[in-house]
Length: 471
Image (cartoon, rainbow, N blue to C red):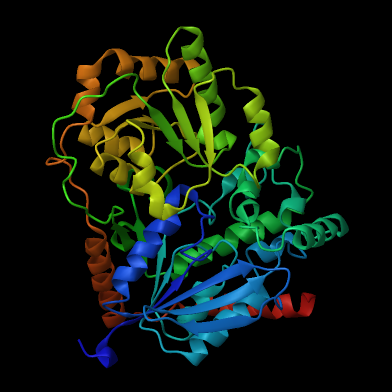
């Protein structure tokens, strides 16, 4: 196809696709998708990078053989909590990007580290918008809203807002190890309840109301919404989003040769592995306690844990003190490109997550490599495992429940080998299918573009005036 006739698409991301600072290897999925799409569309990636050296809210534009990158540099902490969802400086950068370049469609993969005004800005310029619910940031009730019960955790303001202490610590860290930071904490750690253990947030309740109102406006200004799971849509978003605006797309993988489609037998004890975040929400403590129980009962199954340990040292050090079994090994963070290589060192992947998981990228890769699974229930991962018959779904996340599942697969090898059977009956899309589906979606909404509700736009403009007066 002539390059002039290619669709021009803008991806809005929360971090670089090559960054490891994303939940559930999401950046690995985006990187593969962007590589594929760059061959069929004029693709631009827009994302922020935390920096204490570059000029904050400046814009760097580079062109690679695959796609164009637009990177803005942001501080690790902001001046107010409101800026986490309503950031006038980010709005100005986004407006400049849309003014400087023509796009047929904008795909927002996450608004974390951005501004909720983006869809409205796009609508003002007549550009259709697709939004993917790949994280819980937009409607993060467990972190950002009040009045949800005494047991609900509240956010610690210092995790998001600048202070003299955080400024000093940031400068100190930058001076001591200027090249080693991955900003894992800013992208993932500060959203964990472990780092938000306070009874009150200290934020005016009106701020939470404003945030909720703006989240609703995001829904109003987007044309289509992509979900990785119908279950997630039915559980959380059906009352908010009309069915005709919902699109379902399972995360595809890069297909490899069917080298593993052959008989095999495991010699010795079954090896288990965990790949994810070393945080309470991932069920990691229960997993460690389960293998402590197994060791005391005489099982010698190895557990290999892959996840951030250096920047996550406050929680990791506490967790490590709970380890009693010598068969538990911590290996640190792995790059997304080594996912399958790491999977092939184990027999069973365990995902005991407590928070909602809508991703199937890791599961699809694991099953394609003929690994059995032990997963928590009530999420897209469990839905996939149940339908494919590839593992055990836990009704509850407790050390005993996990230990019983592990011992079952050790003792009942026939059942284990059934879960690890050849993948001829395992239907998973190729990443190129995801690419084709999205390009068709972009063409559809670009060809049937509808103007935004003028009353909604007027309401938004009135808010922006008040913001400027407040500033």
